[in-house]
Amino acid sequence: MIGCMRGDSRADSDVEGGKLRMMRKVVFFRPEGALKRTKEVVERYCCEFFGFSVFELRTCEGACDEIAEFLRDGAPDFVIFTSENGVKHAFKTCAGRIDLRLALSSAKICAIGPATMRELRRHGFDHVLMPDGDYSSRGLMRMLSEITKGKRVLLLRSSAGSENLSNFLREKGAYVRDIAVYEPILMKTPEKKMELQSLIAFKPDFVVFTSSLTFKSLMELADAFDMRKDVEDVLKSSKIIAIGNPTAETIASHGLNAVVAPKSTVEDVMKIIVESRCRG
Image 1 (spheres, rainbow, N blue to C red):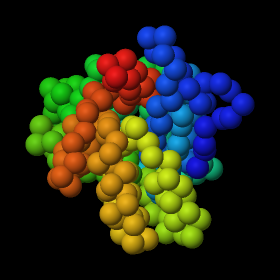
Image 2: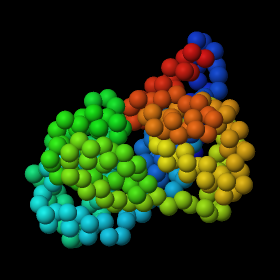
Image 3: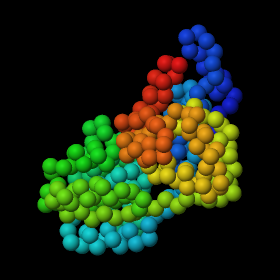
């Protein structure tokens, strides 16, 4: 967990319309490696930040063997990455065995959103396709629906990800190999229980879920620690922001309402929060 920096007057209050008021408190559920960067963005918008990672990410054993098997039959026409972590773990699992940059050099590389694109560029992929505005599986479906018929498609993703994208592309006539390169492991530790207690005491104004998985994992963690009611009370008293419609639909299935952030960047989420704050 990364808390708000103190010693900065912004950490206690801000000014709106000439009136002094307490800072808005924002909770983000993100992988541990993304919390520091998220915190920096949130604090630029004069909000107090609480970062919570509900699971750790582990590289899937055997993923490199599956990738190698697919590549033996020829290079893919398209390679799709549905997250920044998918890129990181794909290269991690293949390190020392497959030169993934070279093996995928002739393929059209697709990223679900800006963070994934940045990670791909860090690995040397300068020309990356990305949905226009809708950074989600649905955005990828729209982008690829008319150009993948008869093509070999390699989809590298989380083991917990939906199969909707791969099934959609198969229906469109593509040959799809769907490989999980990493898996989320729920952290049911005493330390995580204390962190969840701190989150409840934090009493956030806004709670941001970046995926359906983060919401489901939080509920599972709350059940494991017998804290379900406390967590639900926090969510009911906060404004929930969901990145993408699938995340909002998952939240709605639990009787909670969420504002949908159509884009997946932290900046776009914070703009929604600022607009809400300005409306009072």
